[in-house]
Length: 436
Figure 1 (spheres, rainbow, N blue to C red):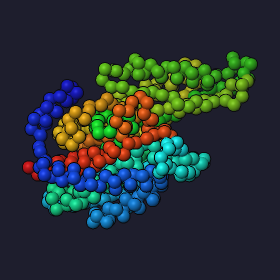
Figure 2: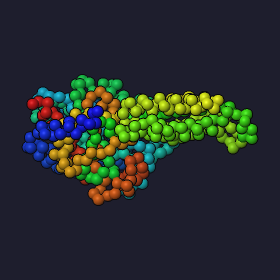
Figure 3: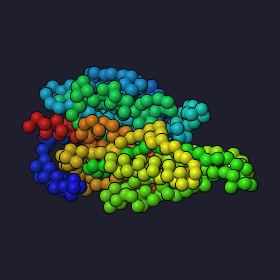
Figure 4: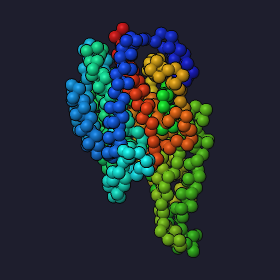
């Protein structure tokens, strides 16, 4: 029902949208243009020195010192390595949170740029390269720029800005807590209590100068899963003496594919059920006793997420039972992110701001993505808007542009200034709307 209301909600807000003073918007634009080189320099430094989740020590130190130099109250060590800055404006008003994630990935960079990462570290017992292969380096640099601009306008701010520099968005190390979930548990949205939160993500397959947004479910909930099928071992020459967990696992995998095709209303949302690893046995002529499968579930609504989990458990256990075996299912196995859900009313309210900043023709309604984001933990607690910033060179082909999480991931830095302007204007215009 709410989907049918989106056009009406957006129309009403667009007709009666609040307006930030042209002078203030012009001031933001001028300041952002003037500091473009500084933002790019920050990004290049972070890109050359990436750090994995919960280990962003150098990055956090640079961020904290920059915020302190602006006269912003700073708290460090939040959720291990997170940094939170509080800027109290000269006038009363709401508390607006702005978030940037800081961590890199265990990826060895192949991009031929002067500031390419050469960093290596240990990850899960192996030496790996480290790369800012999802653009988090640009998020940090952009929010540092936003902090500098808003700090320079402190006397005119109608409220408080909370800058959240978050570790471990890509997931904490095995056996550790981290990321947005831990920040929320530690009270990052309290003292002062946050009214609304904004975040952005650079996108290597969206052209520079463009912004993508979506109300409602914009990125998927994700659950990883483990399925252990237990049967009875036997000599490979005498399979009738076994309860073969490999055969049972094959049946389970095939049956799981019917969830999306037969249980999901595909006219409303998409979903993913993927088995990414299957391990069982160690010799050609021995039927093993058990098989382990690892996989991922992704859904764009809470109801669909619940349905996927229930159906996976039912299919796995009943298929195993039908074959005389047993199946143990753990969902989530090690991590879970909720749906990244953009509050529809807030999205409608702020859409004119994004359009005024980038140009109406450059602000695009995008389809939902089956990737996941732990920004969702913030949005579970307060209304939020998470949008996408173009980072692909103009005229590029989205189908050929290297995707995120790959060694060839590349971002055009000329799009950063738009990100700075958008985050500043969202903050200022939301504050203005609450003081009328």
